[in-house]
Amino acid sequence: MTIEQIQAKQLEETEGLSRQWRDSELKATDWICAIPDHSLHSSYMTYRQSLRDWTNTEDFPDTIPTL
Image (cartoon, rainbow, N blue to C red; front, top):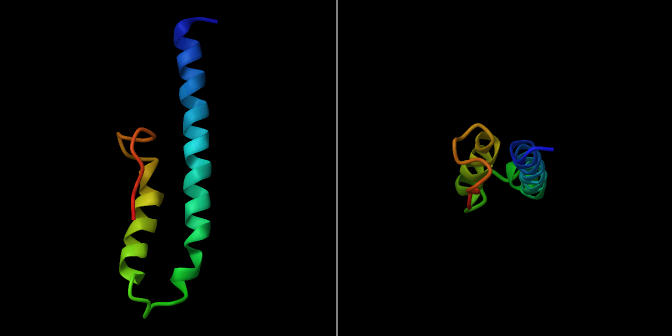
């Protein structure tokens, strides 16, 4: 295996773990969707959208969305 192949495999694994983390964050914040009058509803909706968009950014998986 070449260095490039090893690096590509490591990146693939990191991206997979990052997607798993993202999915768990979305699942953990599902509850807020049903409470539109919650004081942090807007912040959570913005965060959730950032999570969904994250994998299509140049910074993926190096930076993570924050609430």
